[in-house]
Length: 109
Image (cartoon, helix red, strand yellow):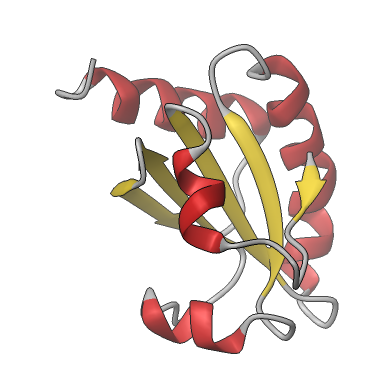
């Protein structure tokens, strides 16, 4: 899982692969600390099908506002640059993986 940096163009990042999952987090967020290892596991398990990118809401407040994030951790799933699903809150790895798979299989492939 790579970290979104200030040099990244967000639009290009979410369009660089068919499926991109942005994991919004914050250093001060307790549930995010629990979710960090979960997302590392999910990123490793789904590396062939989904690119997972970590974004700190304190570093990217305009991005968080643009997507109306009201809490973290938050997951935003993009298909070819289009937001197709979102999930807020912590969850175990299998639940996150199931959510990704269900979202991917809805109508996008």
